[in-house]
Image (cartoon, rainbow, N blue to C red; front, side, top):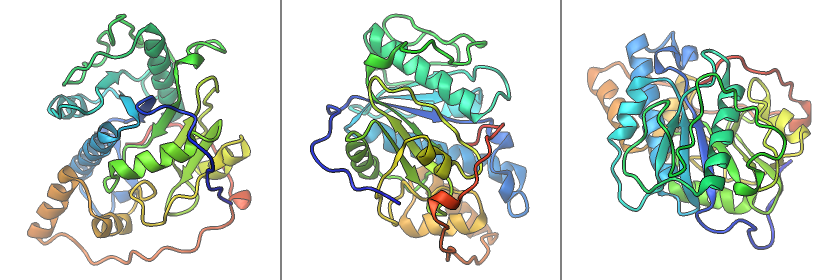
Length: 298
């Protein structure tokens, strides 16, 4: 139930705002609790965010990366990412503590689109701290703002994409190809390797992005009019990490530097177990259930 984009992309190069929502890493990856200690899970979550954001910043089609988080460790990691020529990264605080992934995404989208109308981000090399003014126009998202902008606010600013932060095998080319395909449609979605979740959600300029992340989100996003893009099975954009087998899968694809270092330390300590990376065949999208999620995931 996928469609191959045809024709020329409608979005110019370097026009996409990419929103990456990140929950507190100390609370992340709970489905790995039986295999990793709390410290190991937090370390892995931080590494995956760093690699995902690095790949997004390196993509030529991306003009800015907006990370929505209240995690001080993640902010510190982002401040250390100094790569001339890459898209700038800006941090926006979560709108309300524990408000959930979808609320965090709406806050990030609102911040990105308001800023683009104000003139765009400055080409800084470090991330802004949560709550700092962003962009030349000193646009900021206050801590109580849920991102629920009135209809039409910021919609002319350009296309937006939501990218989850647990894609350590993502490469800039993977994201560039997907954004080029997505630009042919008002709304698009990339389904994860398991076949039920969402790793990338897009909306073109002038189109409201209505996230529905949670169990079975792929089917729900398709139901809401997002075209499921034909992304190769071996693309790092499809391989997120929720379970132990996913770690072996991303290692096979090749992870970014931060995640590679975490996996190498586990291997050296002898704690890396043997895992089966074979995945079951996913059900058809129109048979998938969906429930909203109440907690952001890294």
